[in-house]
Image 1 (tube, rainbow, N blue to C red):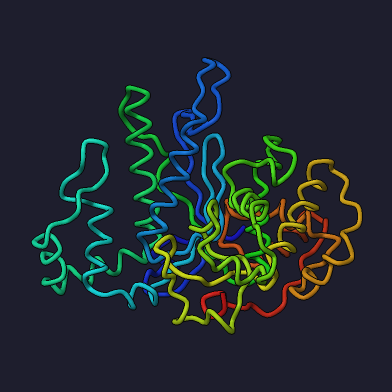
Image 2: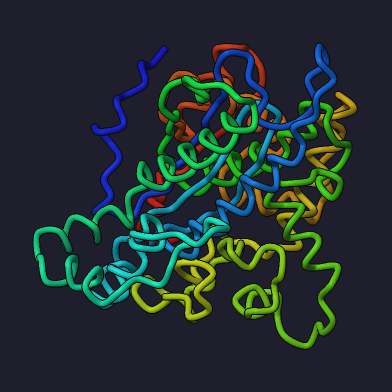
Length: 358
């Protein structure tokens, strides 16, 4: 078993990195869902979390690739984008920070428009400005701004004090494209694996569900899916990154999003959104029935290109969660775990660092 490294040893807000983060409740607290002992429902908190994540996506220089809100924990795949933050003006940096930590709030809790003096207090202080700019691409600050907000609201509703979360969040750096595909499928299929839903389209409060809802409402198919994902017409999932990498139109450094809903227009997988959703659907059905069967022929090339044995794909997705609890996940780690269990194997190609390509 490989020990998990401290986050400070591998997470650097000054670098483009992709991280799988998980935050879990403590004291048998219910983040969402229904408490079977008391019958009390906490389902409304799912929307709290989704709204908070969408808000943070509009402020931070961090791409949210996908997410899932479970009954007592949340999963996120985040990509830090210090290069995007570096392109923001000093004034923009200050205003974004003051949206997170406003000097004044309205009665409904919304931040009051910052005064010029508040903005100048950041922009005229170079040391402070550098600190704030760095925090806006720091995944730990994103997670802090998620956890504190939800804990405060939940404790107020529960009329109690004390810790709401089980310590700090767990983080796992994703180092190659095969691991990212497995991780994305693991996160998007969490409700299916937990028997909370039967298919991705019925899995509420997941990145996959938001994308499926937008595809259903897509009126024109004239433009490519890749172009449509980068448009401002995605009502439900427009705050998340596009799925498909499109190197020609959104290379690193030229992909800053102009809508204000997300940091960039960079995709994260070298396959179209419809193919990713098809792969999710087939995988979810196989996991739910316990009968793997044969993966559809038109989906096999996706896995073969990444060096994943298609016969072991479902095992890879299931194994990913167990590896997450012990070590940073790369395809070699997943392969070792599969070997240890004398089951299927993931044959990883040379590591392709997503910080450079996706």
